[in-house]
Image 1 (cartoon, rainbow, N blue to C red):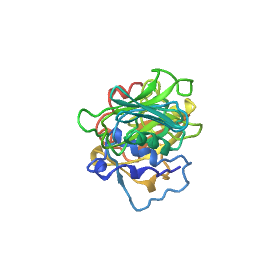
Image 2 (image 1 turned 60 degrees about the vertical axis):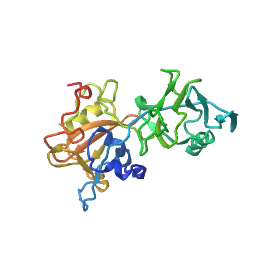
Image 3 (image 1 turned 120 degrees about the vertical axis):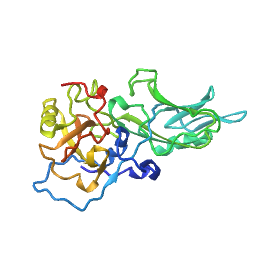
Amino acid sequence: MNELQGLARVRDEDLAGRSTGPAARALFDAILTAEPPSPARTRRPRRRLLLGLAVAAAFTSALVVGPTLVAGQHGATSYANAAMHIELRDGLWVARVKDPHADWALYEEAFRAVGVDVTLEIVPAAPDHVGHHLGGGRSVMTSGGPNTLVTGIEPDGCLIGEEGCHLVIKVDENLSGRAYIRLGRAAKPGEVYKSHGTATKAGGMLSGFRVDERPVSVVRKEAERRGLQVVYQIIEPNRGGQGFGLDPDDQSLPVGDDWIVWDAEPHADGVVRLIVSEERVPLNPLYGGPKPRELTSGR
């Protein structure tokens, strides 16, 4: 299963000179393998993509009724449509998402109605990334003062879908540039997550089990023991393990039992994605060294 959508949202300058790091996984959701291996392995001419550093950030949800604009002394102070309600409060534009499955154009309409240029995309995410900003190709810019972008769920600790529980986005009242926000929502059954994070952390799909630098056969056996399906992301480590390349044409290659797993990520409900390479290198190419200790707990 391959998916190449969304690559254009990463700018050339975000990719320049970068081919490693956990944030590089912001491109992984675009190239996925979920089909059974074909019986014969064939290689095509290399077409490597060097992965770049993605912008990190945060998340939101809301409540509203038909398009409504409220004007104040200095222009609009609130706006509501079928998807979002936004209002000015204590120097911040506070937006609550009423419908996380709405057409993205409705979110942009609400922000622009009050004079701020924000593009908001709400995409399926792993449970621990719901409400989080998943990164994007543009940063928040303000005219004077510190940049302000706050995302989350209100009330704190509530579950999206419950009455009164919303994704919330707060941006500076003085936002003068363009902001791009990619917000995580709960995935529908069968939807592939557009967020990334290790599956081995506490509460993760493979919590308590160390996957990095182990053979595919060992990690797959543990995943299946937990009732998980397995898909693969094939990478090609740079010499010595300092970074890696990603070839879209290689994603359908059959993965051998002796291939090396460098990390595991939530892929969809009940499905884990193993980041693998045929070649073993001295350093974990995703991290440029050992996987951080806080992400490697387990046997």
